Length: 606
Image (cartoon, rainbow, N blue to C red):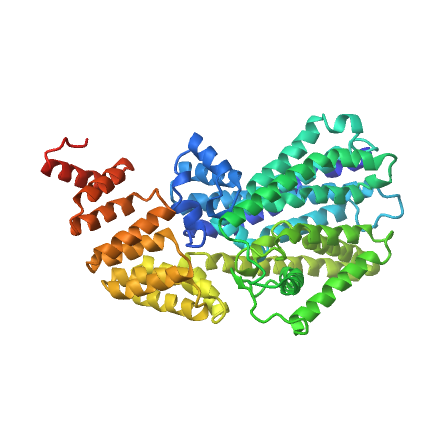
């Protein structure tokens, strides 16, 4: 055992280099702005994270804001806002630091994982290329791939994906601690001490932290079972099933609770698509294609886009889906064949499949078929496979090459490795620039998917509208409606542009179309304002009333309804609405209420 300790002592130093490289390569992200894709709901238009107080914690834990439940992530955004305000520089810095920490943890985890496999494997059976040097080379390669690969840009350069990074810190830490604790004795974690041991609670605490950051961590208990299978080989020890079942029960209970809360959160925002959106057979085909495509993009990281639109024509005999099904079946067969001889390969494949499963699309959330951010933790398995291949290649070349060829190989290996890292870094820097601001993001998306992504045109329209480029905004909203005639948000936003351009009749037309698709308090309110502009006070009152029936806390709706009542002589109704709006903190309502009471010789409101 003592001969194996040096690799643990030096692992911290080995992990620093990939972590530092990851931190440095993402520094250009600090110059990026917020983008109008979730960053608005999550941060710069989110009033709940502006102060750190008891109300923040109550809101974070007991509300489903933006159809999500990840209270620890909300609190982290609140901490950033307290420190940096709404300066995106500081929010990006936190993401970059967290990614550097995760890269550091990946290197430590790989060293611990391979050292555990070596300790649990009989001499002569363990691969000879995994010497201490081979383990370090594997760990560093895996860490560099994890830290520098452009497929992770979305998780790091997009501030709203803080949840990936925060979840990663807890998830990877939990795996590392579990391995460390399990190797403290030859019988793994003793039954008596496992449930009441502080190290057990540390692992459980990491799991809870991961769940509170992003519910994708629900797979953590299954990952622990996978570690029990390989490299720990705990299932073969006497009484192991009872021990393992007792240990894992709390983990699975927390996983079940998190899954239920997440489904409730998604349902609250109507984020889960019905079978009308895509049949189950279509989802199976798209899931298989995503399973294959993620791996393909990790090997050849090109054509990475922020939003992969859900395909319209999904057919079993179409080449992409047929090939994907064949690939999935081939991987499954390779895992099942030679059951006893391929534990390591089987564990690598299982980790990837297990961790990607919650977001593979069988339960469809949103309008994307896949997303680069979903690979943040699942990518550990493919990158580790590449790291192992690198160590094997290095060892094999050193064995088969003659003395003269060894020098040539060694001289060529370093420049080749540097070139590969430079290419990877260049692609990552290019991808970071895509997230510079909303316009660069959606221009890039539309150039990649010009005819299949109404969401991109919609969000670029918002960016144009924010910059007062109304002609471009109207054009993009119209394009979004052309691609998706049921896009009620696009009708609403185009109507707001018409209102800004003093074209209330066109605005009313678009608001009406939007409401026919989906009644919403904000759209009723907007149409009420347009009716008020054209003097249709009765229609305005009706719309403000409908808006308040859906959302009673809109002080502006009370005040504007009061204006409409005044226009038709309803002074008493106006007084009640101004009083209500004033009570909700609307200054305009208070001023108008004072004016009415002054004219009626009634006491003024202070």
